Length: 322
Image 1 (cartoon, one colour):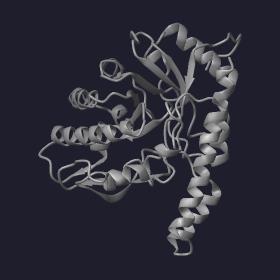
Image 2: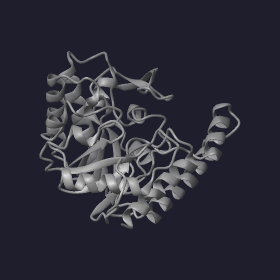
Image 3: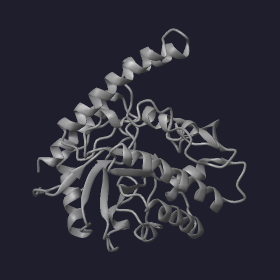
Image 4: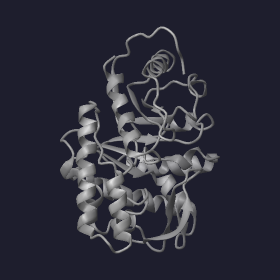
C-alpha cells in the first residue's frame, strides 16, 4: 500500500462481503447444543443478539449495504440443501488454505427452489433496513465447482441447473426487499480455463434476468489472468481481494463497471492503517477510474475473533469520513 501525503477520498461506498464470526457467547451455546445441553431456542436467541449487534455496528459505521452476517450458516453451501431440491450435505472439505471446512454439496437430482420458508430462516430480511438489504450467495461457478455431481451429464449442465435455481431464489429475495445480490466466486480465480470462464459467463447471463444490483466477489487469488473475462460478465460490480491482486494486475484495463476494493484483510487480526488504505483507494481512483467505488473486506470476516471483526468493520466508518 502507498504512504505519503494523503488527499481526501470522495464518493466511496462501503459494505461487508461475507460470513461474520459469532460471538464467544454464541459459540459456547452452540457447542452446548451439540452436546445436548442447550436448546435450539437458546441458540436462536444468542444468534439474534449477535445479529442485532452486527446490524447496529454496520449502521453506525455508515455502510451503504447492510447484511445479516449469515450467522446461522454452517458454511456458504449448507443452507441450500434445505432451500433447494436435489442437494444433500456431503463430506467435509477444507475451504481453500483456511482452517475452516464446508460440507461438499452432493447433487443427486434436479436442482430447483423447494422450500421458500427456509429462505426466511437463512436470509433475515425482516431485520435489515429497507433499501439497504444485501444478500450474499455462493456464485454459480463456485457452487457447481465445489459440488460432487452424481446426476448431471457434464459440468455445463450442472452449472446451468445451479444458475436457474439461484435465479429462482433471487426472485424470492427480491420480493423480500433485497436490492443487492453478491455472488462469492473464489473458485473462479483458481487456474480457471477459458472454457470454464465461458460456462461461468453463461450462468451469469441467466442471472442477469433478476432486477437487483449484482456483485461478483473474487478472493484468495490474483485475478490477473481472468480480469479481461470478468469485465465482460453481465454484473454491475466486480470485487477484488487486494491482498491477492495488486493494482498492477488490473490497471491497464478499461474498468467500466463498479469496483469493490477488498482493502480490509479478513484473514489477519492486525488492524489496517486508515491512511494507507486512503492512499491505496486514491491511487485506484486515479489509475483505474471505475464507474463507482466500494471499500470492503477482501473476504469473509469469519476467520477472525468477533471483536476484531467488529473493529475492522468500524474502520470503514473512518474511511467514509474522508
